[in-house]
Image (cartoon, rainbow, N blue to C red; front, side, top):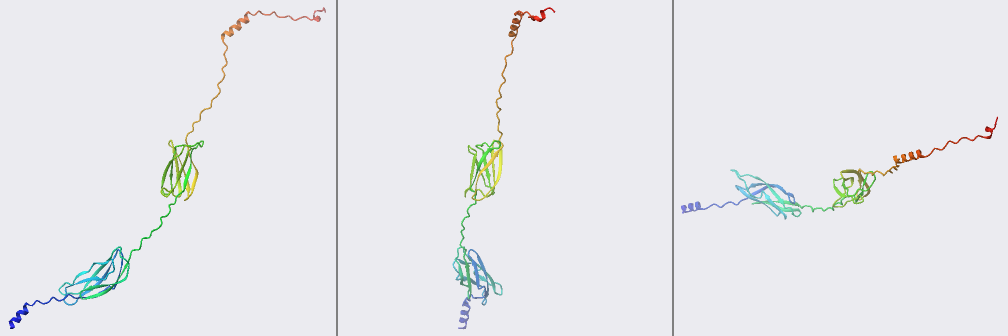
Length: 274
């Protein structure tokens, strides 16, 4: 009978002790930004000879989860002792706001309360687009510097204070025009104008304000002007005397008889005797 009892005792398998642990300390609150994460520190100690326990956080608000530190905690070593565990809680980017939701940090045998606050992302603010500042228009005429004649088909360029550049061509009367718009603004401030024709270039600088229209901006090109010579009257040619006419007159003179010299008439006083 005694032998049987001893044999039964040897064959009996001892029951596995239930895992148990104590949370000796833990953070009592945590605040998490949506899309971010925060950490808490939990001190866990074995309740007896336990070598491990399981740690979890329950009752978390929507969009929040334990991403690190939760799970099995090993006390390890020949002499099991307390274990410090860092627990990371993360909130999704679209997690709703939560103000002090009561959650629990748990191990097998103990638990501690944890207040969880979630700060949701602020709604994006929409700002009205600023109206583009632009000069309304700039117009003028390309002329010849010498006589102010119009210069058609001249290349005219504009550059504003922000570096925008535009180009046009003068019409048949030498006129040109630049118009600003929201898509192609003429930025206020310094405006540089230039014109060229047949490799002759001229520039000018002016200032303009937003909404302003500038007219009469003349650009003078030093183009050479050809002057045609005026007609002079020709001298009248006089006929030269011919040798024949000279001979004829000589002959006529030779053939003409000489008239006798007329003697003076004696007066009566002269003929009377003394």
